[in-house]
Amino acid sequence: MVHGGYSDNLSLDEKLLMGVVRVAEDFKKRSSAIFKNYGLTFAQYNVLRVLNSSPNGSNTVSNVGKIMLVTGGNMTGLSKRLERDGYLIRKSHPSDERVTLLEISPKGRQALLNIEREKEENLQKYLRGLDEPSKLALFEQLRKMAGQSKKR
Image (cartoon, rainbow, N blue to C red; front, side, top):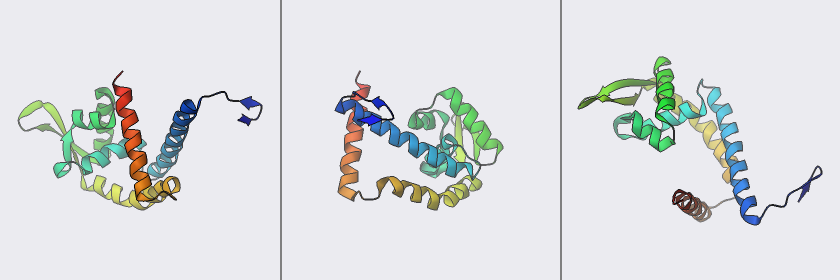
């Protein structure tokens, strides 16, 4: 394929994975623009999303970091800024004071509700034309690929 004097010599495998990366980066860029309108970064939105899906809207810093693939140091900064802005509450675990719990606040829940419509519209820009079986098949393939990459 030739673009502006550039002719790629990528294998089909590499083209496929580069396509996945391109879609993911574009999705993140468009999503970040939506979240910015509500005073949140992409990562901050995801912390709120994880907490909102956790039992009682609460989870440990460590668990949220594992789900998001974020280091402990980055999670500390994210959670402190979200707490400062009123989106979550940080507190010690009742049975182990060394563990910090994060709990989504009412303001955090409201932010997710406010973002929902625009977020869904953005998702549909990428998934329009795919029926549910196609989405499930693609999801399973991506999950399988992610699992294979962890084996190395």
